Length: 380
Image (cartoon, rainbow, N blue to C red; front, side, top):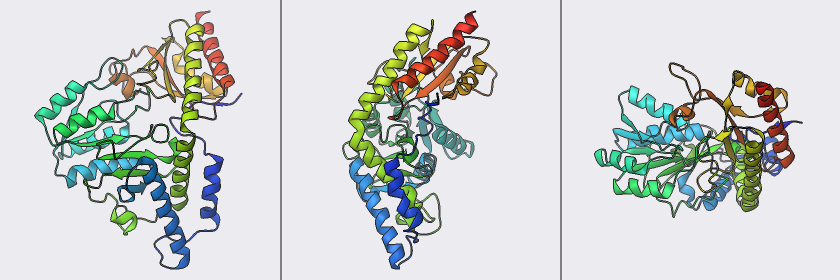
């Protein structure tokens, strides 16, 4: 059996998305910056895609900027937001995606900002009281806290964070790469300055993403060149990627309720079968609380074993694709910064299984069976 359970890394392209993209790969090849009919046709398609994305997120078209993905979007808003707003302090957490964490660390090394980290509870959720304490001492700062963690699946309360940021006139950005296309975002109702998204996380193409920047929080461009993206991102647009992103988001919103229920069922099935099949199994983060954890992600904390380093390889040779890594042990330079950040036990193995609408219950059963065999062999 061939089982793909690494959907938090990337998802398969939806066939409907491919069909929407195909004309812009083969027929509608004009440069959208050209003023002739070939260019105008493509320009019109890009602007229609922008309108689709804006309407689904309840934003205005002037607030949506297409990028090469979530990493570029995060880099843009952090670097340019800090500079454009004249900020000298930033707040994040130690379990952010490296697109945020490394960007902020680099700005601190350059002497452009002082960086603070909000504390986390034992499950990996931010402690709002500590965020408020940091902001009391440093109002008017850049706060970047992700909506949901890509490794352990924890969901942050964006409304609560935004209310604290508003109180101290802070600029609030959230990396929403793991939640766009899986949860609904109402950006007119949510008091947030910016969010980022990536098409390939919700069955769209790789190399296409977007940045939402609230209209009263303008920033300077990150990539200079032409006047593309309303002078916000130089360079010829990734036309078929943009078309694919918009179509994928449309499908995601259309089918969201059914997919949430179905995929949560797969996750619950795996939790139940792991508990009965492997003695001492646990879960990193808040996986068993559906209101506080992504329905698409399950991070499994596995028993101590001398062979844990071989676990992902063993899954792979059995046709199962997943990802993982233990917390960094003392003095180690490799491992999961997220698991280290929540003080997970470095002697235990960890595997992240992440699900999509294309997974089947029998794939879950097969995966748990192979995991159980691995640890039963170890016991023997």
